[in-house]
Amino acid sequence: MRRSKLDPLKKVALTFKDHLLGLLNYFVHPITNALTEGFNSRIQAIKADARGFRRFANYRVRILFFCGKLDLSLHLPAAQTHTIS
Image (cartoon, rainbow, N blue to C red; front, side, top):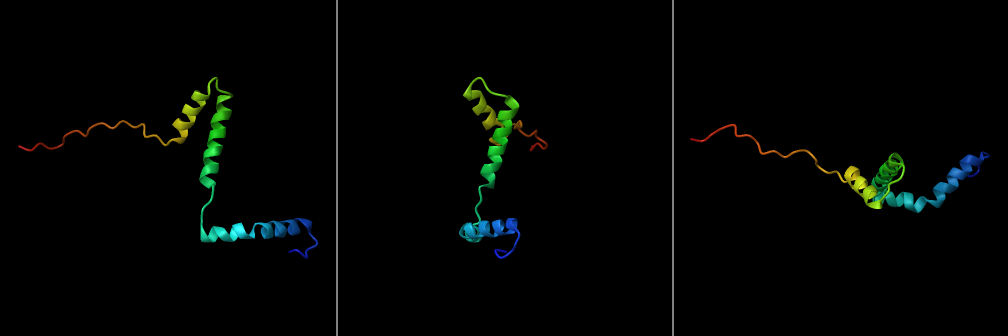
């Protein structure tokens, strides 16, 4: 591709060459920052929905509420179905 007359293809080839070590390293250690990027995207959406918070504490609580994977379902004791006599 480096001999191509198309400049975009040359640019892609150079990008791959520059990042070759990192690309190959992924196959040895398949770790990405996708989870972090997902959280960041969600936090930015929370910020945009709020259009500004009066206090940082309110912003923090909202982030923890939506990104904390809290289990808010009621945990009621199971009703007895059988009695032992």
